[in-house]
Length: 251
Image (cartoon, rainbow, N blue to C red):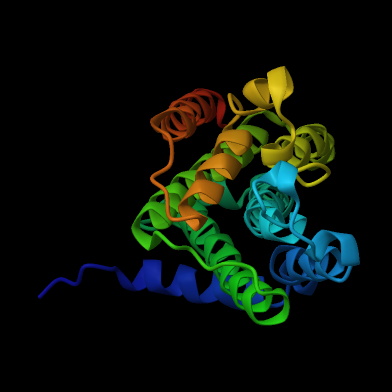
C-alpha cells in the first residue's frame, strides 16, 4: 500500500529539522527575542498603567500582538531566505529537480519548521504576558486563529518575494533588511498601530502587518476582526505569492 508521505519526503523533513535545530541564532531571534522584548516593555512602570487614550488598555497589552508579528517577520524575512539562498547557490535546488523529491518539498519543509518556531514563540508570548504582566489571552480563539493564520501566511509571502527576486545571498540580505524595518514599523514595534490614530493609522492599516496587528488586537479583545483587515491580508497574500511565483529561480 502506498503511503501518503514518501520515504524521500520523510528523509528531507528529518534532515531539515536536524539542521534547523542547530541554527541557534535563528531560534533565538524567532522564539526568544520577541519574549525578551515583551518583558522589557512589561518592566517599564508606565507601560503597566491603564491609558485612557487607549480605551483603558495598557501599552504592554498592545505589545502582545506586536511581538507575535515580530516573531513572524523575523522568521519569514530574515531567517528563512538565507537558507534558500544557500541551497540555490550550492545547486541543491537544481539537483533536486532531477529526483523524486521535488524542490518544493524542501521549501515546504523550511516554511513548516520556521512556522513551528513562530508558533512556539506565540505560545511563550501569551503565557509570559498573561502570567508575568496580566495581559489578556485571546478572548475570541476562533477569530484569533483565523487572523493569526492569515498574518503568518502573508508574512511568509513577504519572505517569498525576498527569496524570489534576489539573485544571490548578499543582495538577498540587503533586500530583506530594506523590507524588514518598514515591516517592523507597520507591525507596531516602535509605536503600536492602535495608538497611531488619524491618517497615519489608516495608511498603516492598508499594509499587511498593520492590518494583521489590528486584526489580532481585535480578536484578543473578543471582537470579530474587521473585514477590511482580513481582506487586506488576503489581498496582500495573493499579491505576494503571485510575484514570488513569477520571479522565483531554482538556480
